[in-house]
Image (tube, rainbow, N blue to C red; front, side):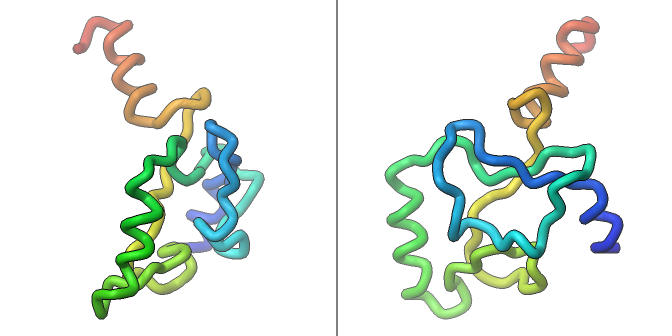
Length: 101
């Protein structure tokens, strides 16, 4: 299944331009699929505090990329971008323009 998911995604730089090194493992992602995937787009002050605290609780250690084979721990959220917005925002806007919302 993971081989098909890799074909599906294209890792993309975050929209806000922040350095996403340390937030994902490049070998666990593709760069030329039809769906753009990235980490969160806006960094809040609480992010660094949560990641720092994560290692203090057994089982909640920082996991650089949950798509790299180990799902346990705390990871930075990864998601889809559509037209440089999140997929859910795009879908809502699409439905709203059709009069469904």
